[in-house]
Image (cartoon, rainbow, N blue to C red; front, side):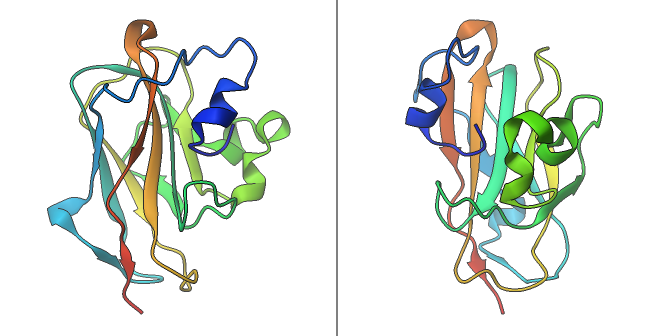
Length: 158
């Protein structure tokens, strides 16, 4: 699954993510409450905060939650032994590379990860036809289920 759609996630047979649990209380934060990005501009650090460790993560930026055009690239601020872009991890099986090269980030192992966790996102080089929201699927540790976490909308500053 390459996007934060609870129905699509639930349709995966024997998913280790468990059931949707919207009360896990994870959040996505932008630096200094930034509300705009500049196409081709500087990297933004997106931080996942929450009540405690988490087991898994899917993270991307798009104009809508189910948009199959994920924008920008994830290139810094994270431990490459724990996280990677989906086209580099499992492109042959997940199909996420088709959503944009380097544009969908995930975990690479099932060990618990700590919060806060910060990830460097590079804006797309051109405006994408609208504002973007960062979308995360966070899998709680210990079988706590998963939560879809949106950031606030980030306006394009063209």
